[in-house]
Length: 626
Image 1: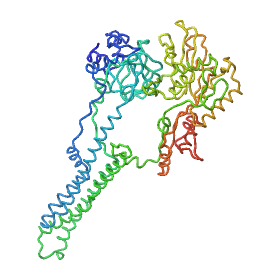
Image 2: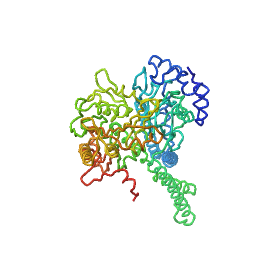
Image 3: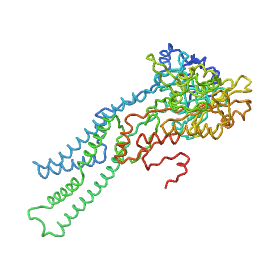
Image 4: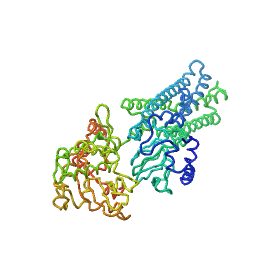
């Protein structure tokens, strides 16, 4: 088992080629299976997790030490407006006591009291907010990730990840620790959080020794799927080292910035007015002697002029303004906390108050992200309720659907002791996996084992641009023939299909009439707020490099089925949208669904009104800013 120091030798902040060379000294990627005492296929045994945590650390970061209440109290006196008030109060106190020893101190003490109240309220609010934020961070960091443990897929807390774990990553997932890719397909990673570079970086497994194999914590998969072996966690990871170097900076809110400018303007204006008054009074003394009081000396008159000037400065500074702003922000923060909205940055209270538009995702935000197959078009027939069973379909079609769903997905189903099933991964894929299990009696785990990347099988992952994904299964090591399965947006896959499987199991031409009936069924499902997914396959006769590309594999397809998947709305969505609209906020929904599905759900939410506009991406991207 490699030590932390040995692992760090090939996990440095240097070009990946240098880390690759360092890794080769231990035998390369395949040798990591032995060096880390793990199994690339079955993962770690749950019995070794504790010892791995003791030897290589836990996958969590030490929280920075928080300021005490007294430190926050002292920091509140650094505000420009408060500093001006303190100076004004001290001058007022000195001059007031000199001018009127009995009552002259009242003005200065009153200003100082207001400053103390501002400091106490600010410190208390910030301290409570910091405590709440730490509690929220503890909950926020409780992310579930997919790993292989004891030979099965499992969902664990990201903090329980250890060196040697085999992590399953899909497009959109955040990489939870530093690792080396041991298998996968079509993987590109967004590393902008670490490098600042906007371009996605291609990653490959051990089959290409010259490729970049390293997956770094804090980055995210832009496309593809991957299995990676963890080599560094927590503070030893790249993100952990970067995070340790970061220094938190206090950023003033927009209102505080404006108040500082105002305080400077008031101070400058008050000083100018006070100076002008002082000079004017002295000018009157010397130019107009007849206006002098007979019992007032020059020294007394100068003191009187100075007191007048200080009075102007004190009156000019609005001592109640900082207190009013602090109290209003504290009140706003507390009110939002009652609605389960924790505001750590006070600027959010100001900026959110000015929000006029909200763009919301659909899946998981407006909907519950609990997908279920509720309608289908299979073998030339539309089923408005549910999906046909294996007894209703010819065996070849059952095989195509079951295999296509199993191998052309990366989600997993986890069964609980109480009999409930949890989807680990994409919820749409989970709905299809549950459908083939319940309706077709298929075991996706057994069928998914048909995919063998070592044989040359490929997975072309889903992207929002293509709106489909395809898997290629070769029949044998020679790769002379095989079958590809395509799954994606119904209207896209149907458009790529030229044939379909009939009820008797034969493959026939997809005529314009039949295609029109399918599109009508898709439209009906979409209008019922259903997400429509189509499945298709293609027999691959040859395996030249040109014929293993997406353009070939995803053309002249044989349509197997179209399924309508329901994702119910969250119960409070309609009222929330209505409240936003009543407040003058324009709510928009953004989704990758079929436009009919999007319109139906938007109407159900109350977002799409009678004269509202629904627009597809290509049309939107052609619009100009004006």
